[in-house]
Amino acid sequence: MHAAPRPQADDGFSVPMRLKAPVGYPALSLRPLTQDDEMEWSDVRIANRDWLSPWDSGDPMHHGGISFREWINRQRFSEQAGSGLVLAMEKDGGIVGQISIGGIGYGAVRSGIIGYWVAEQYAGHGYAPLAVAMLTDWAFFADSGPHLHRVEIDILPENRRSLRVVQKLGFHDEGVRRGYMYVRGQWRDHRSFALLSSDVSASLVDRLPRQ
Image 1 (spheres, rainbow, N blue to C red):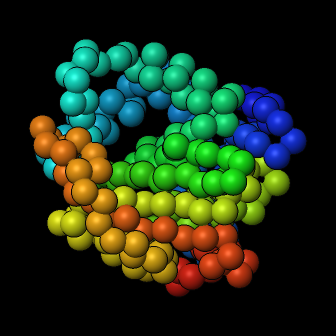
Image 2: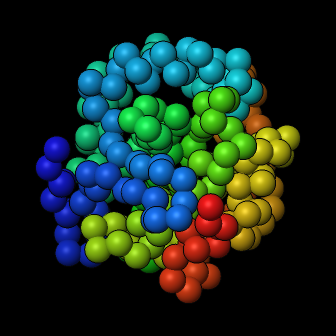
């Protein structure tokens, strides 16, 4: 896989081949999804359907779904446009979750929104906060990244596991976004948490304890 070209000198990003956790942390890596991941990704999602369904967003217009191939093609388009990136969380060569940054804006905004999920059997092992920290460090500071000023995570108020993720990393609670996202047939309020690049002295990963 080749890095996507940067659209402009100051806008966009180059797709990372793989982001690896620093030494001393769980051996987690983040990498772009490809067409070859269809079977494994689908198996993980099916096995975790009940675990993930309370938090899954939906389409209020009730359009038909898209194929895995079309979803991957849309990811490639978002990468080329510099508007978003979806990465598999990988541990011991297998997919254990997914993390993304989307809604990326440039110009006077330079912000993006992070979302993630982790398979039930891997929950509680620190993979979600580590993945968020790794992706945020890339988005803020990496030469290949979009050099964002702000990242945001929006969480359903009852999603205690995700609330612990942003608390561990020191994201700032900015209050409630009313009717922010369509989840399980309803427009649901979300609590919004954000972090600025100026809030991080060197690396967000450094806020997490080493093994």
